[in-house]
Image (cartoon, rainbow, N blue to C red; front, top):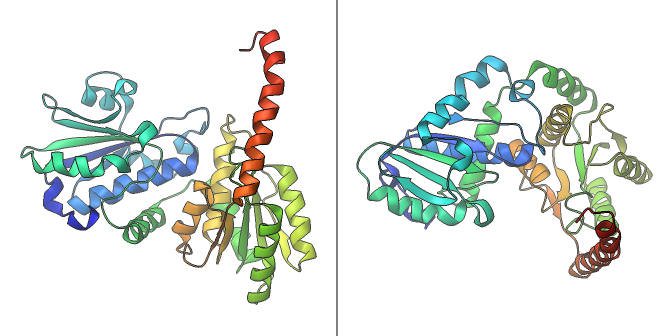
Length: 326
């Protein structure tokens, strides 16, 4: 389907409005995808970045304020555009003929599933339309390689808050050039690679790399300490960010997350969980996705973790019910 895409297929779209959802990396991925789509058809792009529980930081704490404001749309203007609260936008792909607005909100199916239908709809329209996208992931109208390159170009155009740059820049100068290790054991614990595969990847990288500097990024303090010590035993000079906020509900987590993300992006290569958007997209931002090392749990390990989680949840169910939690 992507090989058939041309600018004429979506000639009716004059503006794209993106409402990013979910975690910080998912939001960046959605924004980058929307920007790439808009650029390919000569449309403008506006973003409405609304803090949520899993991404509580105000966007002005993350990005350069004047730059971000020039690209954003207000809540009032967005609600005027859709004719009500933007949270009421219907799921999937819909068309408001009266307002000349198309809505794309993939939810459980993802936005990519509706791209062929969007192109088909676009071909049938002749008047200017606005495309409103509510998304928490990537989507594209070109092949995956070109889509990654387009997102990389977008990431390089981002202007960050000075407070973030003041942390990232001295660390990259002090420790670079370096490679990076990303450990994720909380919300992606079932798919996370096992210790053996992580250790093997570190050994291979250490043997092939002339440098010894290793940035260790993790979603818990325990994982950060554990893998820093393990990597040191393998001959790496490890380092981390000293001040890290792990609780996603705390706005300061956004600053910590973006510092980590930019440091992963600046690495020469990244050892990371394949199913983690955070580090996978950092490798895209840094242009190192071809040389980075994505890892995943072996099938037997994933099955074992699923059984363990089921048994743990089953054991906790009577207690939760008794306490009135369920």
